[in-house]
Image 1 (cartoon, helix red, strand yellow):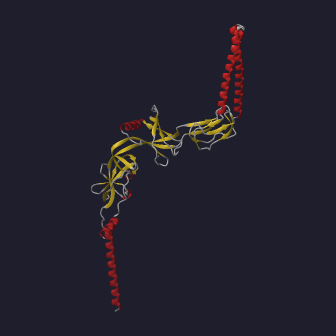
Image 2 (cartoon, helix red, strand yellow; image 1 turned 180 degrees about the vertical axis):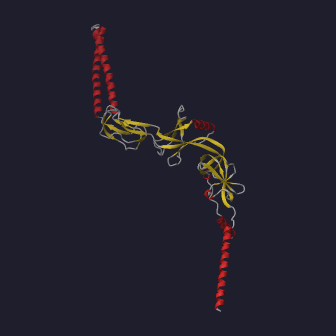
Image 3 (cartoon, rainbow, N blue to C red; image 1 turned 90 degrees about the vertical axis):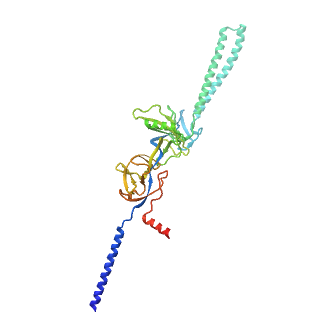
Length: 399
């Protein structure tokens, strides 16, 4: 009986092992079963009118830069502003000790008054001697002597008046005012120092802030194309500015000046553009990229920029054929605007291009293309759902 029980247990174990092996084989076959084409969203290549922009490195400068200098010699006794602050035209900035100039003015006024008194007396004497001369009482020499004396004092009065005016001007120079609105820089000379001795000492510099200039150079070819495009089409926003953080400046520029000649050594033309600067974001000396609209290209074939692959300088796209097969298509790329890239060669209108998930794609892969629209900035909706997700959605709809 014991032997029969042992044989029964062994037979049962063998049956269990066979069933388990059969089950594992079924799972492997299920895993190895083909799942069909993978659904993936694609966009169709389109034609659009694309603006071609040129980018040039420009430097910002103030429209006006005024040097504040001492025009008379004296000790600086007052500074009336904060360094780096804003000043208005007519604001008092510096004061030079006025006492020596006040004394000079008093002396000039005294000389004027003295000669005016002498002139007044000489004029009365001349009028009296003129009557006597007309009556024949005095000689002609005496008459002419008094006439000369009057003319002499009259000339001296003119000289004294000029000295008084000059003294007033020199005294006025002791108070230094802002000649324009803007930001004033660091003080070059501290209060208490002697300034203006032998030279017009630089005290500070004022730079206007709104608007500002941006200067850059453009090639002769780009200048001709940009000028022709501007003449043929009334296009807004032709000159823009990219700041150092990569963001576009909120105000557009206008051409202020173009150099009369092209530099023969570089073949470039200097251009100066004026930009509004109401927020004082732009500062003189700052560098920025100037974007100039060169021309508008009609019927340009475009795809989203992120669809382009670059392998050792070779550009390519993943294109889906009519049979659903993926192939790597070499292309020649033009310029990029707002996340859209112009394809010059290698792509036709309505060719289906994979944009998202290109790292998971390989040439020869069989996919089920789902065409989605290309937006203005080259973006597209969220990536396509996986087969499992689609199956779950189907189950939810059936239930």
